[in-house]
Length: 171
Length: 453
Image 1: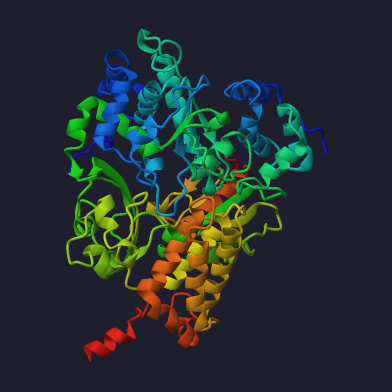
Image 2: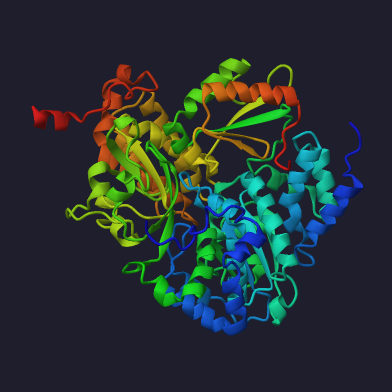
């Protein structure tokens, strides 16, 4: 594994972010920094990545581990290039989110929580994403895909496959 | 159409940009407050307006502001709670996405009133694209001189930042939010001290919901008197309602508080009635945490009066026959809905979101989910129904923060109003094997059937 280090541009952004919080409160920048780190290092937070973030904020590695493991948007294991997060809470269920999950499982040949053999897709179910009026919906990267039907899901998979880009909340 | 204090200009093209927002009267309220009103005057206006917290608790906002420790020599903070995660609620996302400058203007006036020089908007991480919209709008506001040093030539200066969460419902609880903003796990704090005394970095802090803060410019613009002309009793002004579920027109609606629930559900101006020509079975009126009500009790109170969209009317009858306005997350269920399955999704949600700090919530939410899962899948026992009531009772009131209550109330209310449906799942396991068991043949209460025949 190559050395974990942000680009100079990212490091400039990092010091700008730290500057948003009072002197001595640089730990406040932890969540924003972890989002950046996850986005820059293949969609997940390895121990070396978390240690690097700890060093940037001058805090102990454990302070990063305990936070990273608390929040559901941080992946502590590698994920596919596209992380598909299907909302499954009540309002989405009322509008057919179960059908979307079943369709995706069939189409991708994997179960929820698994990654396709080619490493392209990871399928995950998540709790309410605040898009209940356009249910059923899923999130991939920063984008919300709403009012899903089995047809629109198929089209989305084709599009994501063609783009081949890694999904990121930061893009 | 009722008064539109927040969304009046929503259809104006480009209203998310500074120029268009300003051309349509945007930032006039900030100008008025900073140039012609003292800080105390603004606080008094908000108090007289009767504005209540729009995040769910409904606490009078002016009173919350007046608790802020003004004697402390520490910095004071205003933090906007944009961690909207209550299932069925999406009005804050809508508001921030469409009218980012309305929130920014509200933050400027509110920060001025509270004496905050640095303010944060804590937005849930999943709303990252909305964060980008807000950051762009903030840059515009800096460029126009509404943020930064000596705003409009006054001695008031303000820096405003957006801070992303990372997926945790609990961070909507204000002290968990502050912990999270400090770069820690979102574990709610023991209170007292309340944030007004020791909040962010142990400094005096006010945490307000997006919609609450976005209501402030309007109050300053039209005056508290005109604001509280709208509404009924202690429910003044307008409220954003997130309407979802089995209705013809899901979406965000601004209503005058006091609108009859029946009109909200059936009028084409709002939900447009139940989809597919079906009939109404139940409503969760204020986000997943509030008690569910069957059709008859959501349309009329137990006394037979029309139920209104107000804090008071929706809670009329207490938890025996009433519910709560909560966050305004209005989830509608038609006759084919399995109440048990819907409740199981809620229970799974609270189990997933419990921070794990208090054992009644950590253990109880998981236990309720497990029991509901087995009832829903035809493996339940008759005693499970009372077991659920018992677990819910033991969680309620026994935790540091209200997540425990929020997990208990939906369970207790669903069994209170739909017990027969739970028992049906236990009695006829083969009939609930198909996950869509009530879709073709809606559940009919046996008692009701006997009464008809």
